[in-house]
Length: 166
Image (cartoon, rainbow, N blue to C red; front, side):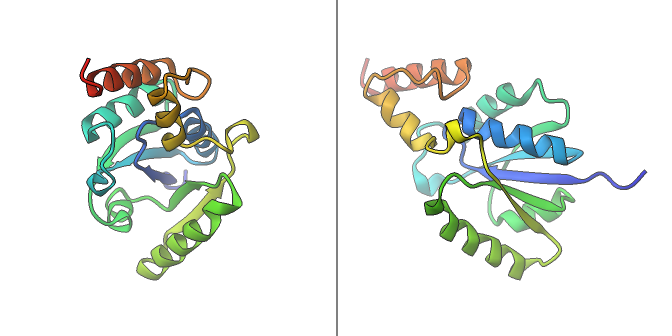
């Protein structure tokens, strides 16, 4: 029995989408444990608070026995070490993601060469999908049920109704 292999899947998850969940499920097959790590990312002015984002992720992954959700602040690589993880998982949607993700991965390797970054491609139906696009569609009154779990759709509807002053 070797040691548990743990991967961290970091992101803002504002909100979590079916694309994110597709990557989580792929990672869950490769690792003993996957931690979906919700970044504080206040600088990005997220629509949902950290607590809300964490709650939505928890609910979305609760059917996956080896997946957990957690929140983190500060440097990702420090969090990865603290959780005794071996790898960082990142979803690559399109070529446009690649350059930024590549720089990030190289930076993280400079900070700690023992941590690997693993890029996973989501299902082709989700390659265009981002939290930003989902929020935009929802904001304009479009139907996002194909893109997010039902509880996330409800949360978006509630949040946007509250935000528009009723």
